[in-house]
Image (cartoon, rainbow, N blue to C red; front, side, top):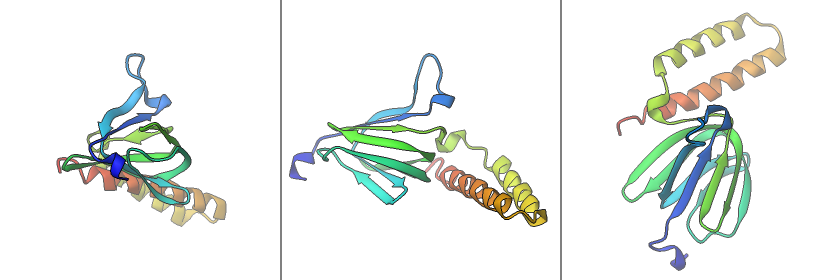
Length: 146
């Protein structure tokens, strides 16, 4: 760990469905540390870490750089860390300023209504999963401007 002092990670977040021709990266920056939600729990990555690959769950990516902490909503994917580069590949990733909290709150209310009216247990489970993904986005949206 002593070797990591003063070193940085290059954090790359790629969301192919959200990429543009000019920029395939949703986020790319040198940072001090990243903590991501994996299917087995949270994983923190510091410079000098042994290579590792992870399956990501839906959760908040916490990005630490100097004295700041930024958040990004990651809606599942995979991550690989090696040689001080962390690459995250996700179908959807949102920074706080990209999230319309009012719209998402309205969508959650509508999904809850649909869930209450449904008798299908599989459908109710899908609604719960949709609500959880939206709640993660709301959590990240609350960090805007902090």
